[in-house]
Length: 459
Image (cartoon, rainbow, N blue to C red):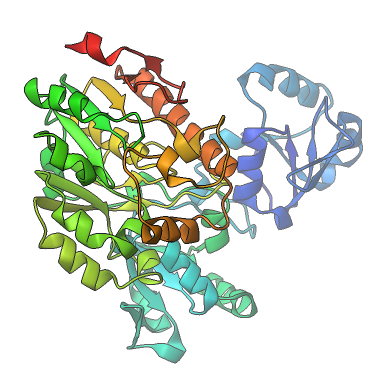
């Protein structure tokens, strides 16, 4: 098999494989793409040329085939017929690729991470990564201090320990080249912060297991449960039906506002919306439930918004057993994930229902029924502004409405609707592939992603 020679690279084939190759090699090391059908355009901000162009220039470059199996034979035949040497992108162990002086941009391996560099980029890294996977910062000017509770070590310290960690460059632009060269001069492999934040979600494998949380793994294997929303259709008589039939259920957010009308109480309770923690933490603490699940408020991106220590103390002293779940951040330019291991972390996105569905799947439930999940502000049909009386089973006072209006001030109902629909579709796709059924037993509403069932027919 041919090997790369440290010349600039031509990628033969656009698409997902070509984009992955470009991300690995780096744009500075790639000359262009070649494609048999889409020449004359740009792909990932790189020019796309025809095969005829390749015939004229291939001897000056390393050619890497980046097409899928369906096109591979055709591309091989073209290259072989015209004496064009090539390598297969998928044949290489990319973390150890022998390609001369070309810089390889590695991907996270699952080790804990070291962030090299302080400044605004470092703050962005703290918002992105879980506290549990950050070992330290490196910065010679601030060594032996702390940055938002994370220890800062020197470059000499890094030389002794770098092989045991993923090194991520978190310096601001004016310092980035200097520390990049410093790493390369000392054979320290590194990853650019932007290549993680803008290219991919930090993988689930990078989060350590939460041993305490593993007690819930397959705890209800093969059983059914009900996830109870706060929509206007929610009826206390339906909840009493759940109570009379000893059904296992999850409640969320302001569900305690209905407790005075029914003996029903959820076994599990969850909240993820920051507004509840910032403004209604006492209500969450006093909600009756055997187990409660909240995001890990001790993580960095919550510290920037609220007094997390005070809130954690209040929640931990409240009713029920409280568990804090690590969060995998999601950005709009990433594919949305669905966690298959809640003991590591969950994707918290758009709606608390998405959080609860991941929890229910982890616990082993095979039938999941939604009630009180109407749509409200997240309805693709009703894109009106926030009017609380139309969106929940309870009426809200002026303070309540004001807090949610402040939280949503930059977000249209249509924007929220699209995100929630995206979450439900992702949950539906995952559960179908894993033999889990989700049914919408809500009386009315506008959520049509899941199969509808009549609530009364279930008993």
